[in-house]
Length: 335
Image (tube, rainbow, N blue to C red; front, side):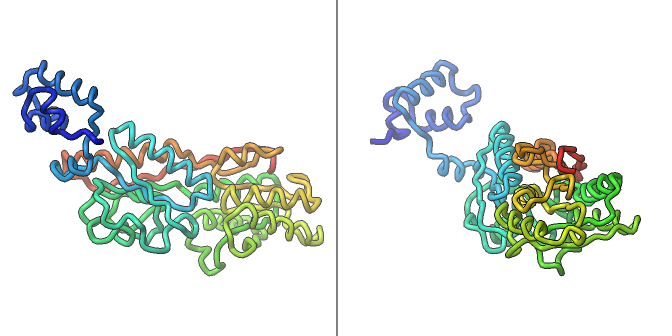
C-alpha cells in the first residue's frame, strides 16, 4: 500500500501544509529546522515517494527536458543522447527521450511526446524542422535548442562545422596524391547539395581538378550492412575503374564499406584509401583503425545543454545562441 502525504503528517505530528512545504523545498526559515528534519526523516522512514506530476502542476515546472534524438542505430546519435542526458541530470533535470523512427537522424512523422509537460527541448533536426512539428503548438512556449545544422531562423542552435569536416577529409586525401575519389552516401542524388560535409569535400576536389564520383548505398540505407554490400560492389569493379580513395557520409557506412572491400579482396589502404565521418569508437576498433573526421560529442553536448540551461533559468532576455563546433581529422590506418 502506498504512503501518502497525510500518513507522513500524522506520523510526524504536523500539518499537511507543513509536510508539503518541507518536501517541496518551500519551507524557508518559517518552519523550524528541527521540524523540517523530522518531516524528512519520517518521509524516508515510511518510504514516501512524491507525486512528481502533481508537484509540477503546483509550481508549473517539471524539471524535465524533452530529448528528441532519433536514428539510434548509429552509435553517433546514441553517444549524443547519452552525453546530453548525463549533463541534464547533473544540472538537476530529467530527460524524456523520443527516439522515433527517422531518416538520416531526423524525424519524418509526428513524435509520441506531443502534449507531455516539459520545461524545454533539445532536438536534433533538419534545417527546416521545428519542435512544433513534433510536439505540437505547446512547443511555441518552450525554450528549444536545435542540434545538428546551422539554421537561418531566429532559433538557438548548436552545430558541427560539417563543411569544414568535409574539406579536411578532401585535403588529406589530396595530400596523399589521390586524384580519383569516390563519395558513398545514403541519399537520393538530388539531395546531396543539402549536406554540408559533401559540399565541403566536393568544393575542395573541384579546386584541384580531382575526379569525384558518388555512389549511393544499397537500398539507400544508412547501415553497416548496406555499407558492406556497397563495398563488395566497389570491390567487384575492374581495378582500373575503381576509385583509389573513398570518403563515406559517416562511420557506420564506412565500417561496412571497410568489411566489404576486405571481403572482396581489396586491400585498405593499399588499393583503396578509406575515410569516415564522426570519429566513433566502433571505427577505432577495426583491425586497422578508421581514418575519420572527428566531431567531438562531449564539447557539442556541453554547449547545447549550457545554452538550454541559460534559457530555462530565464533571468535575462537572451538573443538566439548560434554555436558552430569545429571538426578535427582523426588519422587512423585506413587512409
